[in-house]
Picture 1 (cartoon, rainbow, N blue to C red):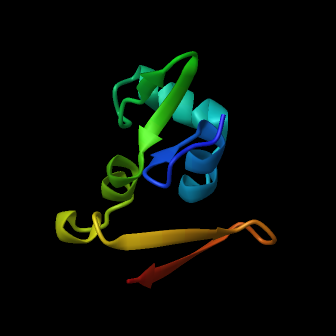
Picture 2 (tube, one colour):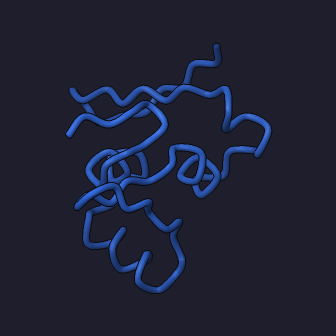
Picture 3 (cartoon, one colour):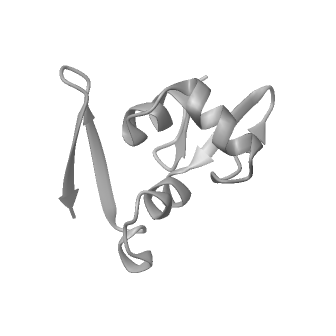
Length: 80
């Protein structure tokens, strides 16, 4: 199922947060991580929720674009 740019799969969340799926699920169960949105059988996270969790200021979560370089799993940010 393709996702929209504003919705992230657990794999995308793991790459952004640089943690394992197990860690995301554990933090989610402990209510220490943003709750996903259920879309059919999929759990998807709002990009803004994850950016806020990562410490980006509230005012930038609407405009910041995150690019995950799949080659080396590093994040680069570009405002635009």
